[in-house]
Length: 77
Image (cartoon, rainbow, N blue to C red; front, side, top):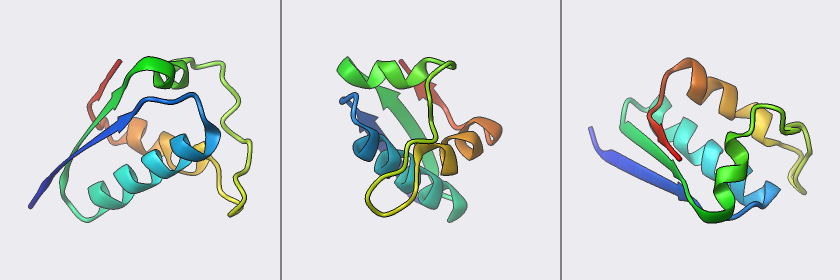
């Protein structure tokens, strides 16, 4: 098992979607995952934020973030 640390530092929908996606994939493969939201990335900790905005590839933060929350993946803000 490996340990992954994902850092999201931008308030950008595509960056957030990829960060949450990679964190979910790593966690699904039974790796230890930590997530940090820094700088502009802290805006993704807002529970009222719209997580359904689609990226160019058709996915969105809501496709991955609820899993991370449900699985209690550690997140630092």
